[in-house]
Amino acid sequence: MTKTLLKASTIKHRTNKLIKKKLDKLWSELIKKRAKEMCEMCGKSTMLNSHHIISRSNLNLRWDLHNGVCLCVSCHSLSNHSAHKDPLGFAEWVRQHRPDDYNYLMVKRNERFDKDYERIERELKKWNELKYFPKKKGEV
Ligand SMILES: [Zn+2]
Picture 1 (tube, rainbow, N blue to C red):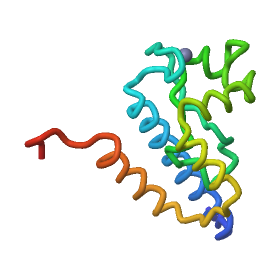
Picture 2: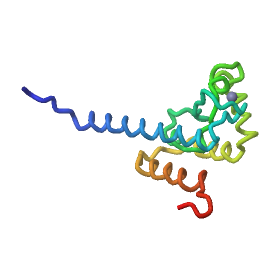
Picture 3: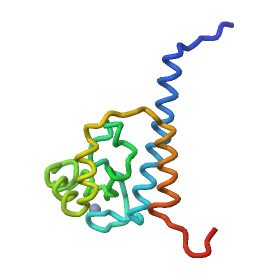
Picture 4: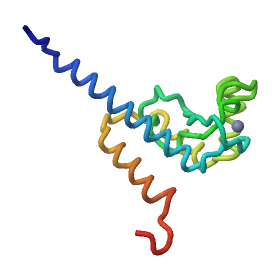
């Protein structure tokens, strides 16, 4: 029986796909955790999605927490005023409610992606430990 040998480029492509999937999951969990499991627009706590303010096709911002908002399915895509159905209205909401992130994204959106997935993973884990979830006094 002969084994099929995969081309190096195919292996790299598949590995990158797995890494992206893992980072997507981590990013999504952190966005919800930061929002304390509530929709950031209406406050509901059921059927939550992590929404990319700038499309996830922008790899430089795909796993950046500045680029995420926790939304219920209605505010995300179902209602006529949702982030997906009213992108202009949503951009305005971000500008008003998350001005620092809005300004950050305006600067970062045209930067090139360095393809350093390990750095991204390290940064997401660091955010998890330090930035949004500081340990309580005395907690180890
Ligand atoms: Zn909502």
